[in-house]
Amino acid sequence: MCGSPFPMSSPPTALGGAVLLTVLSAPRKMLSFFKVDVLTGVLTGPTATLSAPDTPEGVAFVGNFMYVANAEGSVSAYQLGGSFPGVTLTGVPGSPFPAGTAPTAVAANGLGFVYVADSGSSDIWAYSADPTTGMLTPLPGSPFPAGTDPGSIQVVDLNPVYGGPTYAFVTNAGSDDVSVFSTNSDGSLTPVPGSPFPAGSRPSSVTAEYNLFPPPFVFVANSKSNDISVFRVDPVSGELTPVAGSPFPADGTDPVSIAAGGGEFAGFGGPNGAPFLYVANAGSNNMSVFSINLSTGALTPVSGSPFAVGKSPQAVVYVEVPK
Image (cartoon, rainbow, N blue to C red; front, side, top):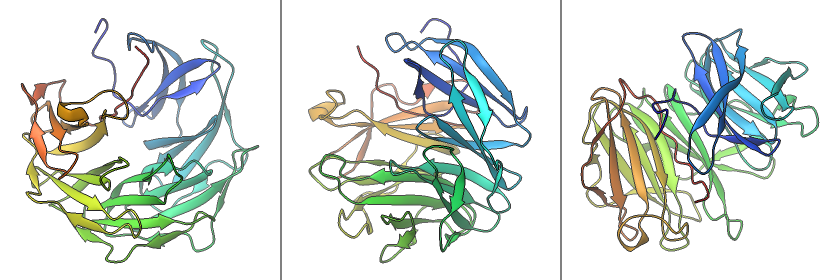
């Protein structure tokens, strides 16, 4: 693609008819915003930059409000305004909001709840986001205990077509397991039966792929054991069961980020409409790509995998854009 490589980043958001990509630079304490050409994928910008007072570790969006997890123990909140190229960022009253001692990741669901993984206290901090002001209010019972050193969190609606249950999946690098919570209507978190579930050595990233049939799968990148744990999810209880053959070799060293995408319902994917799994391997400077067996969850490397990328890739995000 013309202009590639671009700085690595977080998922995009829409603003004023444009699609924006948010780039975190932890060493420089800076956030940058790029306009995405949805036809070519080319980035223009940065359209705006924000010098952050703290070290950004993750970002999530609720509408036009942006929430940034800071390593120093807080969540900064901003309202995005204007339109390309005049993007504006306005601090939300009361920001930054306390969030433990060492946040590592942040996620949000469609109901306006924000969740922060705190590796320092091994908890998940949960908030309700005011839809008008963007202010965060801690939920009763927050923070909720996780495993040791939680580093990645994803909130997934396992059946968005029919409004099925929503679960939060958290990798715990210090205890080598995955915590699974059901997210209740009030935003609170309840551990599912059997949680946490054993994973590989130092799990670093988690993603989920849902389909109407069969039940969905959860994939966990284990950075120390250099493999991928694959679990089948019980769509009713949220319990995880390892699939046959799990864990699968990552075909690279230090897999730190993982994403799934494609599939028969999106009109993309591999054989028989199977979705793909993408794994960023920081130690071997490459990206592994696997086809996912829809029936068993088994992973098969695609032709040519792993693919060389830039030095020490840290994040991978799958986004579908119109052709």
